[in-house]
Length: 259
Image (tube, rainbow, N blue to C red; front, side, top):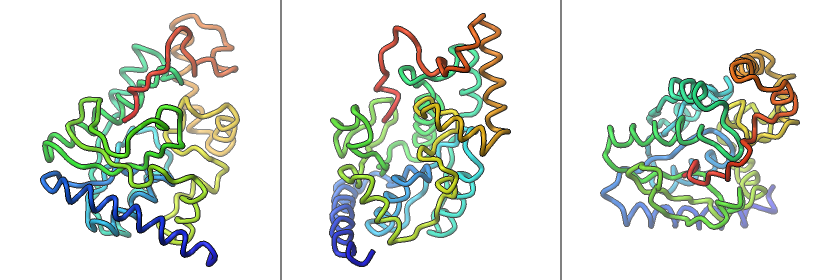
């Protein structure tokens, strides 16, 4: 790790400077960190606490998270002595599922319904507008590869978004976390490389098999929802067994489901 110290110091310094400049140009906006406890948001939190010190943690609680996620959220709030502010999307998830079926890779209504809209309502209720630092990276997906590092949210949330680690590859993020040692999410010790809500359609089938083995109760709960929708609409069993619920035929990818 010592051989990477200087390189990581420069990477961190660059991200801190970026964040300080953005915050300085937007002093009228309350700064906060959108925190989901996965590796990218943890790295972003580290940068922000060094750049602009005490900021609230925003957590979009879908009601569908792993227990380890909730534990890490609380631990991070206590460790950095930061206010934790939650939005809730459990009810809207259930209602939308009943109307539209499960979220799919090309119909990811879950992000907008369970995270973006509740967070937007929370921000407007608390501050009217805000500056949110998020862990978005240009290497994460095709749509994010062409995204800006600073932008106004297009989903109706009246605030500015900034991505301090926008141009950082995953290896650099992991090295940074290993050096800094922030509160660790134990989900990474359970063979999970995608940490979000436990039935995220962007997960591959191999990950669902791991979740079935490691968290059978969570898997059974999700299976009940899928089976209920299958029975209601007369769908074939392959819709579940082959993971076909993860794709809506004839629907284009919805890029607006993200920030």
